[in-house]
Length: 160
Image 1: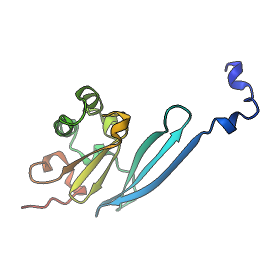
Image 2: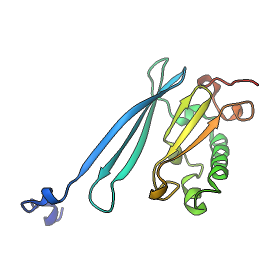
Image 3: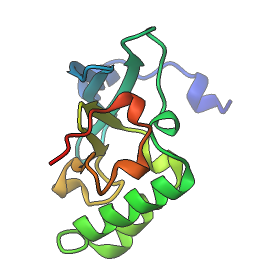
Image 4: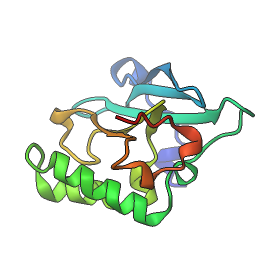
């Protein structure tokens, strides 16, 4: 560590350099899953606080944490959802930033929650859009046209 890190701050430093970590949570539920959605912000100096969003999903049957890999039918499903999201956002967001954040890499799709017949993906600021655009959402309804993408043990598919 450098000396500056080990030194105590000057008197009054914390009165003029306020740091903050604040958050709150809500839940989303389906018949099979429940999700804690944690939102908040961290301010460590600079122009603005940095918002965050995280989700933690569990099985109602056994309280086991569920990952997206368990809900989708593999890499091909993720690639198809990624393409759907790129199409959805192509008219409203800068293409270069959106494309990078929507690539079919599991790490881009970590924040989500489920209702009985829909999955909602959340994208924090800067993942697919500028800070000023805020958090973004993308929904996929589970229906006869998309059911092949999903492990239907966790969804209800409403037939027309």
